[in-house]
Image: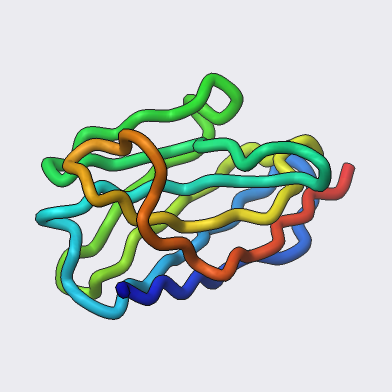
Length: 120
């Protein structure tokens, strides 16, 4: 099982930026798509950004144009750069690994989650 460790969450004012990191315990990006989910209490986990093994990216409508997913193959780390943050972006953010080349179906592994709180 691949270990995913997130970092970078915190409290930030609306309009500011934050970058989340997800370090994988081994080199996986050539064979596994990666994704960032978020979840608020009493709601389902929502996929907000994903990257295929070839680097193609997808975003949910809620974050398109504000969030950017990227990766550093040498560091086995995937990032989520969040800009123009809004209070409705407040959630626990999870990094996820898919067994497919695109982010299809359910992820195989999850990180522990990192809290992002955006104050108005």
